[in-house]
Image (tube, rainbow, N blue to C red; front, side, top):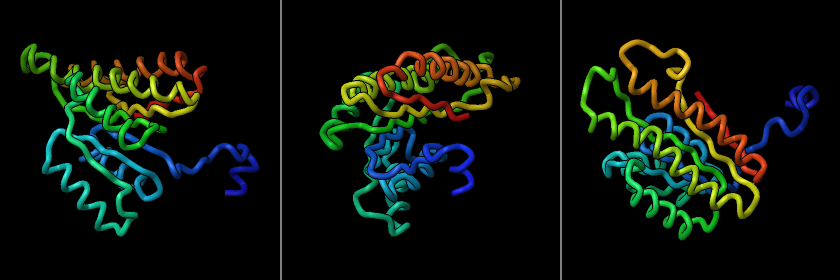
Length: 197
């Protein structure tokens, strides 16, 4: 570690502790693993669409002998504006301030040759519009304190653009472009934007 600091500077690695963090799609997969890791030293609120998965994520965290109360959960569908509004009202009541947003809620889908307009609309609202809406809500809160961090979970699909995955690729390509542009818009407000893919 000291060698890394000597080469890159002491600011390279900053521990994430004592933060108030919201993770969408936090009940399964990457979101769940991220929540379990971060909630050991931070206050974390996870969001998911299904009660059973939410209960399992919270129960599994308790088995880790981690600090009680560091991980909380809430049901919400980020494809719906009313759910997002209610979610961030809950964040205000629970945390008072939001330090980090992890946009992770996303659904898989295959080709545009499959499904219907209604199917694609739901995927787009979840995978792309949900990111936009949650980022706006988070940025509105963070800019008042001139600090914060928005982390968008993307996908290599945005670069690989594999066959038979055109709908999913479209959403993840959108996330990539959105993240790069958003960074230029809100870095000057003291808010960091990270894209992980």
